Image (tube, rainbow, N blue to C red; front, side):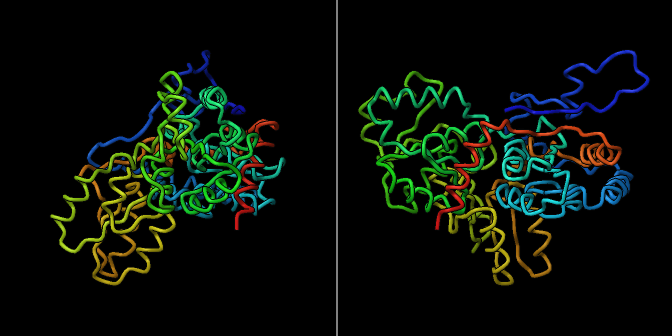
Length: 398
């Protein structure tokens, strides 16, 4: 798997940009850069308003040749230029449904653009406005680490009983590993059905890379116990587990998490209940198990949006998910007298998702309008073959 980047021409310069300069400009990738969340006290300030007109002009010039995807967690100044919005899998499928679009500009993070490349045609080119827009969760499981884990399971004599289930929020390499070993992909919406399918195929599940979604689905939704789950730590010998612990487990959870959803705590829940009497606590299943247990409602991003759409006027909600989406929903439903607040008192946003800002989007659209292909995300054919197999198994789930 590789990123194919056509560099933006550098004119009237005697020197080439340094790797650091290219990283800051969003034209190189660094998996160690800007992981997790930032808590600056407020969201980043809007970009130069002159960029709005430039973005409109470039998008109009490209016409139907470009299709812009905007993830729910993107900032408003970017979302306004999205042709469709949604979660990562919905957007990848929307891209696949637009074969006439030569360029798919994915305003999201790296693994999302990879999924779009896997599901679109060979003639379509997927572009990520900033190559450093990664995902801390996806980066917590590398192909080498997962291969080593499979060796550990083999040595414990249980690999043949294990079916891998990988969350959509994973790299193409991990999706390909899942496809090669008879597993499937899941989203936060269909994780329970994916696990049911996996247990029809084998006796145990290796769930990658988000431990919390795996644990919450197994225990909260499927009636397993916490003792049925073990946590595999790729940074410890044998994952920090004995062969007996692996043999006794039903769910082998990868030690990964979302840096945004992992911030929410039971204290956050208790505090908001004390501050806002009668508040409904609504959280994403990527939150910790104890937070999910303390909440009133739990569901995917799409579930959260639909729950707030259906909520009665005058109701109060504390939402545990990414800040950009919470603020957008709060503004959207304010006229209906729905009070919607961020679950955590500290204002935090996903720093990697927020790398896609208006300057990067404008640079991308103007470059494409000038015939310069930039920041292309391209998954190699072998990886694509097996990753697509895992995705197709998910699509075949009833």
